[in-house]
Each structure stands twice: as structure tokens, then as C-alpha cells.
Length: 234
Image (tube, rainbow, N blue to C red; front, side, top):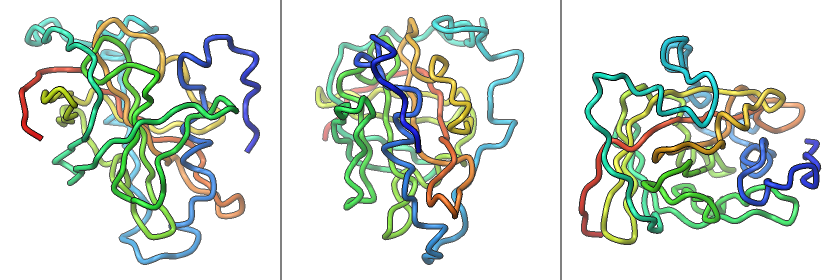
């Protein structure tokens, strides 16, 4: 897969590149092509779970416009703290989080594939719960079988995503939309752009699989925003 010239964007070092998650997570996917024992291809989001004309923001960073006026007042943003675990009960995810950095190429490093139940947080970016766009990525599969975000494409609007943090608080997010994008048409600004409230992106591989290239064709992206917070013991 051709990688972008990272020298073209002076802001790239401060945010993830357009195909960072694809390059780090999706090349060399083996589950489907090798015919490993599995329940079927990873689920992909339906059009009904994507943004619609009435709730999609026309441009970023105006994403707060997606919140209906009748919605409860949002919680105050949380102080930055390192995330330690992501929990999504709807798809039976409870996974530790490791810090991820950018590689010299400018791509986001992937979590190790030796642990299928491991997610990664872009540590140079926003902490989940703080103002901005927090990025959490995870493998859809490895050579050993389905991985932490295998069922990410099955999430629905309104689903809760909990992120436990090192300061013994939990940032609770609500899913706004789930969309799949081809690598050739990845909306970098929409996914990674700055926002003026606490938001979360969950990213994995999807959008089809190429057996000839041995890689997924794009990404599944979950968009969510902070709706509550709690104190936890972990």
C-alpha cells in the first residue's frame, strides 16, 4: 500500500494521518484469507448507523451541532488522564489500553498482535474525556483469530462506550454514528479533526477485504461523544 508523504503536512505530527490506522492495522490481515475458524467476516455498519443529513455536521470542528437541543446538558470536560481500559458491553469488549506513538514514517504504531484483547490509544493526542478527539485503535483480527474490535461494525447509535482512566474515573461516551470508509476515500478531517467538546473515535479495519493484496480495504470508525462520567475502582 502506498503511504502518504508525511512532509506534505506540517500538522501531521500533532494528529494521526489519513491512513494511519489502515497502514498500521490492516495490511496483512489473515483471518478471512487463511480461512481460520471464525463465525464469518467481521460485521460492517449499515447505512442506518451512519450520519444522516439531519445529524451530520456540515464541517468540523462544529460537531457539537449534532447534539439535539432536547438532549440533556453535556457533562463538563474531564481533566486529562491516561486511559487504562475500554469497555463496550454491547459487543462484549473489555480490553486494556496501551499507549501508541507515531512511527518515523508518520503512521500510528499498532498494538501488538500477540495479544488479541488489546486496544491502543494515540498518546500524543487527546485523553478520552478531555476536550478534543481521542483516538483508540484495535485489531479486527490476527493470525490467531478475531481480535478486540472484531465486532466494532455491529455497534449501533446510542450504544455506551466506557473508558476507565488512571485517575480512577470513567469517561462514558455515547455512539453518534458508525461508518466504514475505503482507504482511497478516508475523510481525515472528519475523523481526526479538532472538536470543541470531548469526543472519541474507535477505529479498526474493515470496508471489505482483498485476498489478492492480503489486506482490508479501509476502516470502520465509531464516532462518540462524552455523556457522563463516574468514579471507579480499578
